[in-house]
Amino acid sequence: YVYSRDESTYGITGKGCMFGPSNTAKLTSGSLSGIGSFTCKLKKGFTGAGARQVGLYINGELKGKSIAWDNTETQTFTVNDINVAGNVVIEIRNLTSNQVVVDDISWTCYAPPAAPLANNGLNITTTGFTANWNTVSGATSYKLDVSTQNPFSSDFTLIDENFVNFTGNGTSVTALDSYMNLTGWTGSQVYTYNGAARLGSGSNRGILTTPTIDLSNAESIKLTFDLGEYGTDASSIEVLHAADGSTFNSVTTIVAPSSMTTQIVYITGGTANSKIRIQAITDSN
Image (cartoon, rainbow, N blue to C red; front, side):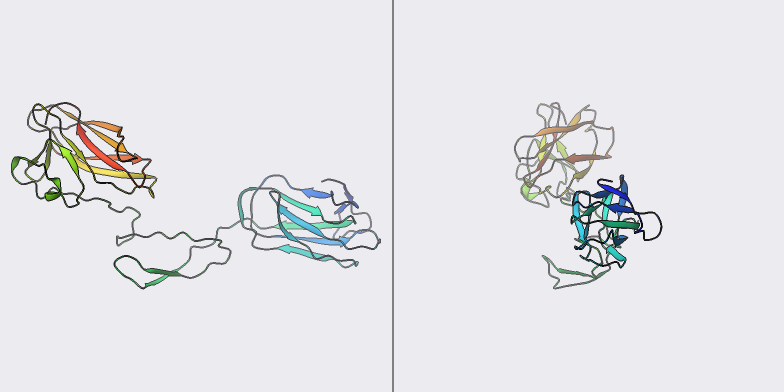
């Protein structure tokens, strides 16, 4: 407390804190864990004329003021819907230069608002819809998660290539747009291999690069693909990411297993211009 004393003969329910005749008088808590609402009792200290008023500050920010009064009645000062999570400091400050007795201080802990109940969407088209939900008391904003999957999943597929057009074995694929589900792929030394892509020849390494992918809204993305050796060639591949679409940086290297095995690689730092590349490290298949 600052510039304060005991309640003298102006107590409310026993012991209390009286602010001195200064707007520097205040009562400050230690560090607390969140606050939802606040209440306390106030009373005029001494008999001098003049309005009394206090303010409630949370972490230095004004959250509410009491009424201004000049009578001997006990006042109840309440501030609802404060809703500050984490570490907080409660401070009651004298807003005038007159004495005020403060007592019966209490507050509730912060409780996050309940999740809103989603209602059926409206204006549904192939490119969008209007979301609807019930408002929640105390909420200052809402986060809307959208999924193309049922049941709901936060994972969604950006690119899905199954190489179904890579029939036969050994055909050089130079016009990738004619073979892939999505246009914009580029590469070199790419060959068909019975429903899979073979990268490289005996003397040149293979490279396969995605079209531009917008990864700007994802903290990380999961790249999943099957990988295996070709014949007896011992080879490894490298996964690279170009955030600017042209400067490729290595994400990881993987030794090709003896048979087709699913690989999972996580990539961070995505942008709206991202591209991903898979390439052989050495000149082999």
